[in-house]
Image (cartoon, rainbow, N blue to C red; front, side):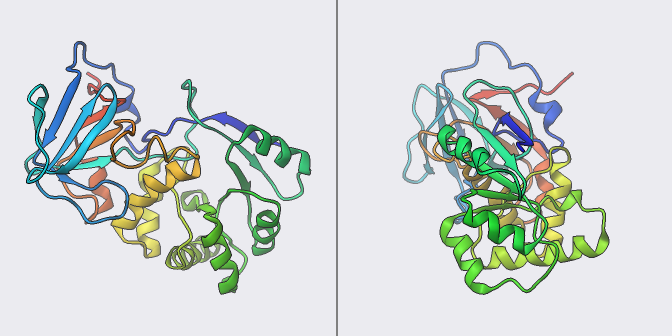
Length: 287
């Protein structure tokens, strides 16, 4: 049985929802350059100090160090000194209705193959909502692209199975904040860390409090920098939208945050928003 096929916005959902719901300011410049900030681009690579990020017509035009990247003379310049530029976080489970946004299908073990076949025909992400290691093995064999929740019945996960998950690039969305059983939460945290250490992509999904979910990932042993990648690049990958979103790279949508503190040192710094950009436009804070 299909539990849901949704239109999905690859946009932030930590306590940013109100911020991003604000109206865009009128008459914004066509070309904008953020100059002098530390760039954390979401790819997992090293930060770029004293960076230039140039946006044109809603897309990232150029990214690099100010040492070797010119600021276009026509650009409106934003002083990023002392600040940090990061991709806008993506809550995989946050439901939206934006045109052109990716869809996904959620299934459970026991659902008929016709559900999977339809998802393949639609070329949509296919998430299995699981509990056990057996569920995970079965659904990998059936061709899912990701999992909702973490394996919560055992820690005895075969390294060969972890390697298979890694090689297939199957994304786990642990949903730790949803756990109400303390023993299962502790087990889910340990398995999240083990899979992440094994190279399995971890993404963030909460449908609500994304910041709480990221805090729990740090408690599980992931570094803040790894959680930032989970909340950006891996979220876009889970939604099959990585060619458009999830990292700050040329050609991608300009969905980003300008922060006053470094989230790679403390993931809670994602709350310290100086400015927010969506589709290349600054979003006003609600009055």
